[in-house]
Image (tube, helix red, strand yellow):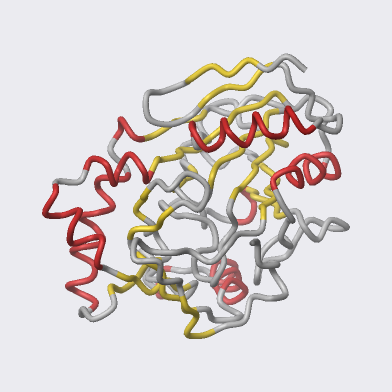
Length: 297
C-alpha cells in the first residue's frame, strides 16, 4: 500500500489515504500507522465497506482489544463493540479521556460512523501534549507533582431532581460497579516519552486537596487542553473511522444536531498502567476491571 498522510491542524490530526481498512495490513503499513498515530494523535480514515468485525480486526493491529465497556452494554452479538448512539443520551458531551476511572485505560480508541446527522454531531479531539507544552513554567512544575482520583461516579452537571427515569437508569448502569483510581496529572507516553495532561471529566479530586481546591486546579489545567488551537473538530461523513491515542488526548461529542439520529461504533485497544514523570504507576482504590481489559505490556 502507498500511504499518504495529510496533516489537518498544527497540533493534532491527520487524514490517511491509501489504506484499505477492509483488508489485513502488512507489517510495514501497521508500523507506519503506529508512527503516524504517535505524531498526530488522531487519524481519519475512509472506511467504506467496513463492518464491526472489520473494525475489530483493524484495531487489533495496535494491540489486544477490550470488551465494550466495564459497565455499559455492547452491540448485540459483538461484545467488544460499544454503540455510541444518540438514542442512549448525551453521556459523552463532556471533555474526557475514555475509561480513565480504571487502572489501565485504553491506549487507543476507534470510532466508526454508522448513522450521521445532516448537520452537527462533530467529535472534538484535543491534544493534551500540546496543552502541557503550553503551560507556563510555574504551572507546569505544579502539575508535575500532582495526582488525581478518577471515578465513574462523577459530578454530573444536571442535578438529580432534573433527571428523568430513563436518564436515571443509564446513570445507574454506568455506576453499577464503582471505580476509583489515582493517576498522575502528568502522564509520560510509553512510546514517545511525551508528557501530557491526563485529566478530563472523570478526574474529580486532586490527592491531598479539598474538592473545591481540586476543582479550581483541574479547571485551570483543563482550560489549556481545550484551547481551540489544540483541538481537531471532526465533522463526520458516512463510512469514516477515526483512531485517536487515548493516552494523550481528550474528546467531546458535540450535541448540536437537534436530536437527529447519530450512531458511531467504538472499539478500544487495551492499555498499560499510566506512569508519572518520576516513574511511579497509577493505583486502584476501588473496582476490579479485569473483565473489561487485559493489561498491555
